[in-house]
Length: 199
Image 1: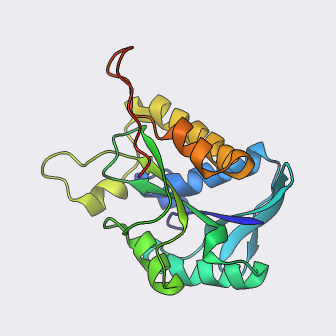
Image 2 (image 1 turned 30 degrees about the vertical axis):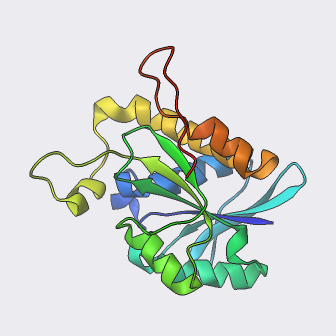
């Protein structure tokens, strides 16, 4: 069984913000996999299956910086370990539309990840990082991630959400290395340039 957590802030006010794209991807996965998310304690969660693997999809109902206790509660509820966790979240350091799968590492300034690491006592869990780009000059990072995407970015964001769901499917059905090889590709500068970033 795998536990897939989509990070975000609760409430309609934040639903379409950059900080909630992780939650948006998990909700899109739930729709695609016919999983109903119901309130269960501190999250909206549901159980489904991809091939032979049972999956729990969950979106915390607490604030982003309180994500850790929600994750530990779900791990206890489903008798899972940090190695079973996949966290889907926004990333300021990736260009808008870029996706990166990572096995471990620091929080990179992300309060949701910082909370999860503090609660789990480890950084060794899978992440699907979704690029939202850097804020423009003069805009604070907190204001930027708590604002909705620009209208002209909607097509890119929709594509990123689709790729996020596909990355989760590949991770679960094919494994980490195939998923990294497929989804950690940098955008091509031209037909002859293609590099990978699997660290």
